[in-house]
Length: 257
Length: 76
Image (cartoon, each protein chain N blue to C red):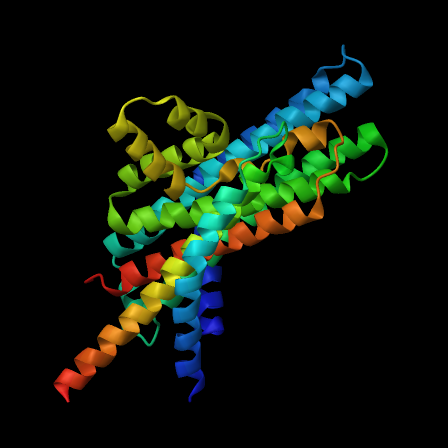
């Protein structure tokens, strides 16, 4: 692993991503959605803060997920198609370093966008609550971890299938991962067809547990979350993302270009 | 023994140990709760999935290494 090469590829990917119009549109729409919650002035202050937190956290998660999918599925296939990746890969750059660099660039892009959205959200919240809400900031950090995991999954799919199919598959992972514990678990318990149960179980154990990154209920109702659980979820994000990136590197190393 | 050889031995041991541990974690977490952070089912599943992924990756690394060594031996 060559950190300098990874960082250089990451920087170039980050700059490329910033030029994408989709990113700017998502950014403007999300900030507008968060800012529009201030118009609900006919509610009590407490209710208004709860609505602001609820809507804003949902908007940040949704926009972050869409952004991660949009950026990650097109990054490598576009470079291979336009042959701009060849000069990089023909030099002494390992395929795994290339994958890690691309992933770093995508994460930096997501960090910038979510950071800007988060600044607006936390600023509005600070005006209402007259203090900086560290719990919400921490919750947003976990949303960022979730987005990074989703970006790794999107990048993995983009190495196997076309960008359109990989975007659809990533979207499925995003949606099903959100309701894994609540819906899929119940679906397995209530399923009476053995084949369907086995398929559902396979999907259940392969899917990332994205639901565990969401602490919306705790943040809205000011409930404390045990630090052991936070550490477990962070470790889970690191392990799952690392595994997906390792498999992506292995797939890309064996691919003929 | 070189550091690399020690690492592969460690990974092989990890691959063997992690899968049963994952099963134990999953079995232990059967308690449902109102919030996900109170539920041992969620904690158990997270831990189990982490251990399975770690086990699979460790096993794959060791397997690739062994196949590479066998091929190297045949070529020699």
